[in-house]
Image (cartoon, rainbow, N blue to C red; front, side):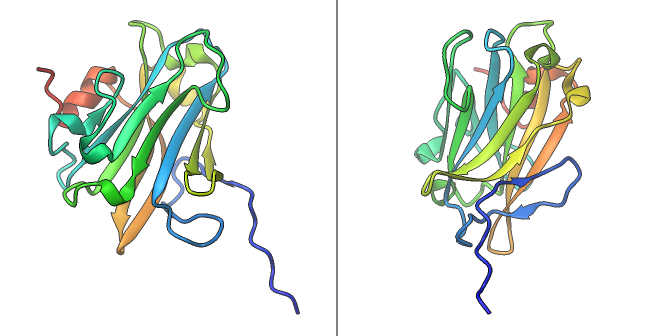
Length: 195
């Protein structure tokens, strides 16, 4: 009997689902990954950001909040890139890239969020949001997630993904949770203090 061939289809993650081991289609741990996001209205401006947090849920340094005005984390362990409103894009309009091997040992998790840039404009105005996790070593996409539109229809900030250390490796979880207080609260609650 022939062994079954592993599937190269992305696993669709949902809100409330347990975290998944962060492994690729080849069964190997993901080391360099990209969180990508796109949305229907290409003229709507969304910032994708990340916080690299310690055991207390706080960023160890101000550079561990990665967003448009601080594109690189220490040791180039993470960075953010995006397309401007109206600009043509490929699959993603915004991306956060994370090199797990370069993360400081004090960083136990990385949270990825989307925030509406225009004040008073909810994420729901962007239309359907689609996100993915891509293995940068193989260009395969092992995980995809589309948060329910009703969750972010009237909100300015939403946590999308969390990747955290577990059992000597990493696990990834789709969050799809709105963040009360918007983008500034998301940054502040994780220890960011604009200087």
